[in-house]
Amino acid sequence: MEKDLKSLVIIFKAQTSLALSVKKSLENTGLNMNEFVAMEALYIKNKLTTQQLVDSVLIPNSSMTYVLDILRDKGYITRERCTTDRRIQYVELSLEGKAAFEKVYQKHSEYSRDILDVMDPEEEKIMQEALKKVGKKALERNTK
Image 1: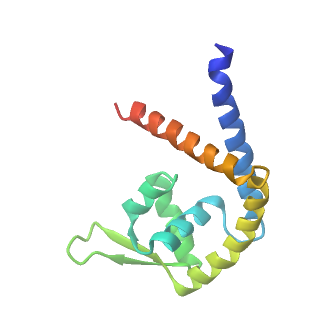
Image 2 (image 1 turned 60 degrees about the vertical axis):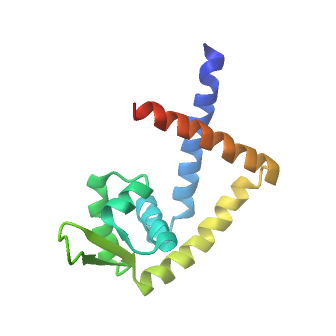
């Protein structure tokens, strides 16, 4: 039984350590982790509906409105209602938001890369594939 759970314990401990490292990499940037991941998704995918943004990041729907309000107040995003369905709201990074994200991402990327460089490229690829496989299986079990 202990062997069966060892992998889960390792995954959870690594996730906790990585989350703390990401939080540390964002110190003094003016962004918290939720703001950063929302901006990252918008930077990569451009304009998204609020629901698409929720679906692409690990921020609950109930918290996303708060995160988006903060980003709007900082001038980092713009919001626009859909003209055909007023319930739908589009969100995208403003020019100021793109510039702020690029600046923060550079520091974050260097910090994170330093952690990941403990593995050689082949080990990193194996880890990625293994975690994808585990994640997909967990998702399957959760949606049954």
